[in-house]
Image 1 (cartoon, rainbow, N blue to C red):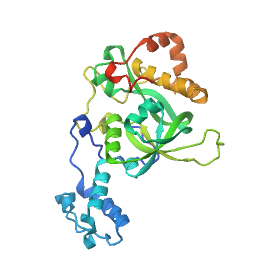
Image 2 (image 1 turned 180 degrees about the vertical axis):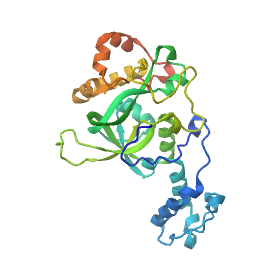
Image 3 (image 1 turned 45 degrees about the vertical axis):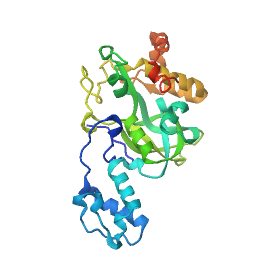
Image 4 (image 1 turned 90 degrees about the vertical axis):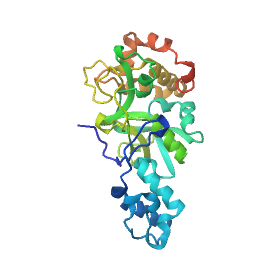
Amino acid sequence: APVTFGYSSARGTQRQSALGLAHAAPPWVSSHRSSCEAAVAVSPLSTACACLCVLGPGLCFCVGGCGNSTETRAIYMRMVDYPAALRPDRVTVIAYGALLSEPSSRLTFPSLTNFRLVRVRNVRRLFGMTHLFLTGAGVVDVATRRIAALCVEPAEGCSFVAAAFDVVLDDAQREAFCARETGYAIVEAPFHGLDAGEEAPPAGLGVLCASSSDAELPSGVEPPAGLPHVWGWARDSGLLPADVYLRHCLLAMRKLGGVAERSFLHDTTLVDRRTTLSEYLAGGARERVMAVRPPESMAERFGG
């Protein structure tokens, strides 16, 4: 069964046009009620629906005609096409992998602000999914099983240090983020201040890329050739971090230093959920990982 977070996990249909991938037809009827509720936020007159949504959003009229306004149609399309966590205009993003590099994060969110360290509790960080981008680009050798990207899953008692930053979203950034994080369940999760006590309430909610399942992959996205799946790797599968991706993360963590770097090394595990990243690197992997270089075309994204 897929791992699910106990937070706001309604995902919606993830747009994939930035990758040239098809996606399922928007579920007009099932999502129309929430769309009309969103219209109420635009105008109190939009309190009922004429149920013409089966013909498409452009033919959806609410009482008072407000449901066909440009602003309401924009809200409607956002609610249909993007995960619920990405629908607000302002969000906090929780970064725990490649996005720990602020320069890499700015490739997707150029105007991000308030980049800071936070702690995520009762969640495990692990190298547990196929890195779709690197395998698709042929940058990693699937035969070695050194193809994993980071993901997170609920795990009582686990925690790790992450980065958080604030973003004023527009649809271009929503599109870019969904394309960059294809395959993840994009959810909301609580985060805490670094020095917050165990009983302290969360400092806020942030957008988090969580573990999912192959059954939830967007239409047109499949396991890369030669691999059985994207998600669901067994603990004894031999799945290992993708070298170029791990190097990028290590360089980013070196820049952050201190508690963030220590947490990355000691609070991150391999897919077996036992071997820490520090132990893996000490076993002979560090020299190989740090010697690898990304292709020139990916140097900015995977340059630490």
